[in-house]
Length: 115
Image 1 (cartoon, rainbow, N blue to C red):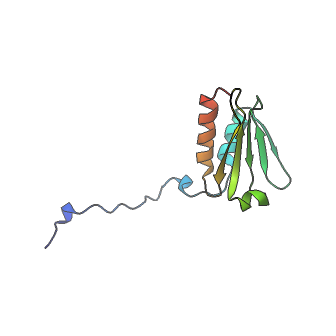
Image 2: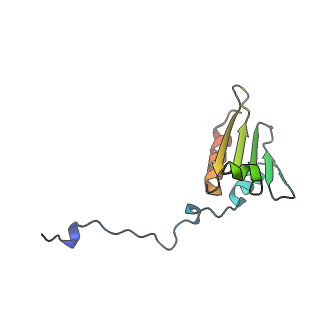
Image 3: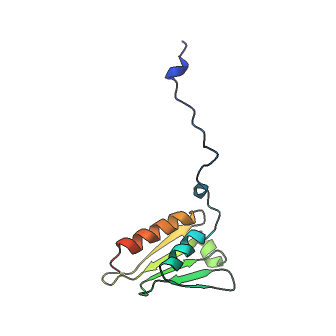
């Protein structure tokens, strides 16, 4: 049985300009740029880890590329939130989560939050 080429599914290959964020490069730039633009206090450590706190002090973000405890848990981003009403909560992102995804999460959090 022969099948016409027109009936077969097309082969889709990634384009050369596939978004770079599909593969994490462990660069914190998108998150740090966002937090800096929002007026957060951002401090880096001699070990190259970065800690940031929102202006109201209710959200803490850390980027931990050189923290052995974080690597043991397979995380590199740690977000801690203390809502005005309700229980505190934590969100962590793994080693291969693109920083653009973390920046998107934080942008949505601060945009739609009543913290």
